[in-house]
Length: 417
Image (cartoon, rainbow, N blue to C red; front, side, top):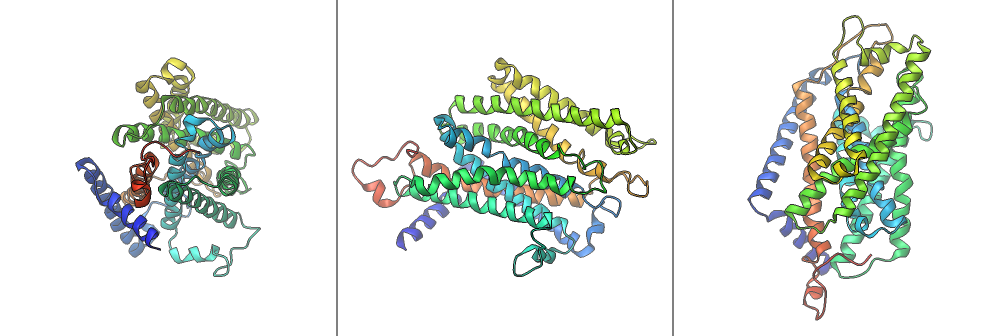
């Protein structure tokens, strides 16, 4: 028990100490959280009328962010497979950081679902025993199941690995590896079930496509690793975490394949819609061309496509993929392209025109932006705290007292996996 108390105290010391840049970063995140909490309190008092969501567009900015972040969380598998299936050491050394990002992204996913509910107590409806989740028929129940299972699985993996490393012990492969391998199908299932939520709605033709799930997975393997690559560089500079160039370049190479697949599937879907030219083409036309003078989303469509194509070109060429200026530019471009595609490009056209043919042009209100900023603030706060604890453990500067004092004990370098 004393060891647990010592570990918790040590974690608290790590989180509460840091330089000026760290304190400024934490203060900025707490300010974002405060802004979001204030806006959410206003939304709770006024109701969802404080947003621009209406009967015509009942899913919008919050659900768009949720869908994007599910992809970021699922993308951790892009590190897990080469690290633990193919035993590639450069990525194996940073795979835990991908799991930390997945935990942070899943936290934001659940928060975006919560703020999208006009009555947060309705969340109890999908809790087994307390509510009536209508499982296994309800896809919402399945989504809640896989998201929470993936979150708990990542928490268990990270906690087990960090505690073992803190004690200076090797993890038990009989426990750790089955959990790691289980995380691969669970990660894929999170974005697959999310896609099924959309394409299972026969009354929404824009989403009623069988390739939506593969598109979700492909885009996840673009946007999630883009976030990781930039975060890895920041960690390497600020924490002196030994992240090799080979790991970053391999992730970038894998991203280029995913980008090609994402663009190919997008082209296949556009061909199907425009060549068949059924009445369902209206939804695609609204996004890419506009309808009857309503062109609010058209700039988003072409900006998203331009960003994705430009990023693909930068990642396809080895010289630009291994140049950190063009690599980071490509990461920002693909992040922007997928973020728009999963937000404005997926949600809004699915509702527009509505079932009565009315076109309601949705744009997020200041309240929605503020709440989203607060949710992202919480997510980055979670990631920062986890990294502040994990990195010293992994590099050997934070160990159990008896391990630090033991003769010949190693206090540097990553744990032997």
